[in-house]
Length: 579
Image (cartoon, rainbow, N blue to C red):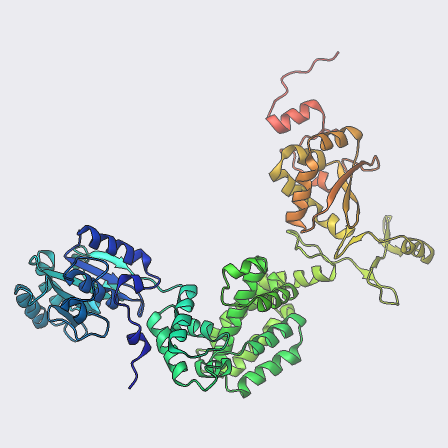
């Protein structure tokens, strides 16, 4: 019978323990300096190296050249305590699950006072220490507090809070952690090379995912895959079917259908999941994880996402970046909430396939969702139709528009003239004449890729608010006397009401402040050009009306001396003298 991988590759020195440097380094330093304690508590999740580290500690203490962090491996104690060795009479391992009674504790206490047979120390390794009964723990308390000079206790547990506080306070506590995926994947690849088995690309990340950060669980799963490997090694398809994960192609089809709002393809994908024997719960969980990955890719650049999604190749990251851009941040967040809620509902008696199909249906229909997430999702779609990529903080309904018969890309807005109604009459909307519309259609439409001037003007108040956070002088120059005039592929032209304000804007290098505000709010990077436009009414612009009285001067001329001092420096007019 072959030896299990987690036993075959059990570490024998601290240097071979992976992912626990915060524990192994202090223990090695204590062994080097000779400042060891009489009782230790090793805690942490299962399979992360607690018991193995306790055995390494015993081996390092009882080595003829010890205490040392690097046992010689030649003395009798080192040979007895090597991984999978015969063991030593002076190192006693007890399982508190079966030796947690008062009588067991009394027997251990009585035998502890006898000297070791051939080693320096008699070491007790008590595994699953949280299962010690209250009576047994209290019976051990005195000997743990004041043991003989040749006795050392090492407690190992997954639940340290269940161990009585009087014992915990007398130990040096070292918390173990789950091994990071990158370190664990590297360790598994090294083992595969030593075993001489070829593993297909993508199998190791599946093993790491199935283990949940536990080294022992990862080696158990890997051992199962290696045992069933064929002449060509372990294939990705076999690993997917054996571990029960969803094939990446199915997830890609589902996400692409969700991005295109293609209900037929999405429900066909669900049918393929069921027909291929996959668990609907597992598929829903994998879909939720994929949505999480898409949110990360959307928040970061595709190149920067490698630092978080390490197990994904570059081509898949690029494909996920496009998927995230097609779905949108609000839709991703809403879909993830729906999938998470559906996973909770699958625990009931309702058929899992029915819940999965309802999850897909709700993802495709944000119009039936009146919650805040549903409204944000619908607003995001409307903004995509209006060619606005970045959502505004105060969204407005889309303007009524019409397209030419040739279905041209550019949209020509219909101008509506409202006449003031007299008493008893209602307002009347009169569309402009075809001649005027044709003349306006002949003029070039100012647009920048997916951004048009109308959309930028809707976002102008948010840009102004962002400028205010950066520099109040620039905000005072723009808030009530500026407007967007034109936009092209290289420039954003801003009109200011007078030459003095324009000169102040240029001298203060405010164009860079405004450019950074456009980048942050709108997401476009264009050079700023400022011109004088006397047609702008400084008191009738929306920005001027939005400025509160306590934030800006009420004088029509924003740059008057008294008003500027009051706004910027908090000055107060004491008296006025007429010349």
